[in-house]
Length: 279
Image (cartoon, rainbow, N blue to C red):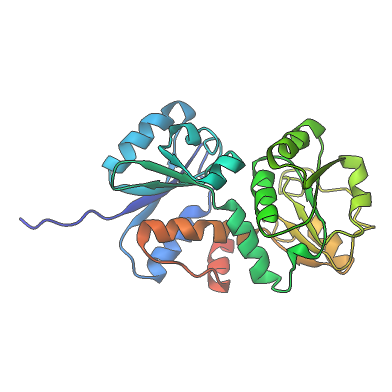
């Protein structure tokens, strides 16, 4: 009888999970690089999360992507939490280490920056203030990344001000909190403008705040990628801004996990975008 090494398994856990494009993305990379392994969507309820983290490594899983509703609660279950995951308060990437420890990380911020640098190579984060719309988990990752790359000031606005105030308490004096209705006036000298809310997503209300006063030299990014060109990006482009859609962040945040699990750093290129867009 011949002994065969176990195929590495990875997957994405959440509930619901059928909408996730991660299996398409990782499956494409596995085929592209001729790697052995599988990537599987796993619909796991919150009540079963702890037990799943114990069982999955025994089944051959080497790691996971994590999505709603587990991104925050997984931190309490991990043995090792990176500084950036702790700062953001959420994890999106899990590694099951050979020593049995569960390692939790957050690659959303690095994916956000990599997307901007790829599609707006002249972007200079230190050129002026950033305006960030939203104060949820994605906003926390974006704010942490903007601070790390040297943005001098972040003007944060959210429809419910207390959530924005909580982010300021977590990230410090570089953040100025503005009421939602005041944010239009903060756009005139902003070098970077980011929508981290779900406004403009298919099935959600539109982003209706006027961009009439926006700095035409600003880089504008929308984390929403369904549709790829949101009304927010259309309005910014009409004002002369450089615009970057949100799909690249999804692709770039996935690359570090794939490399750790399967041993190959995948390229995020047009072919990769086309595969995901066609799914």
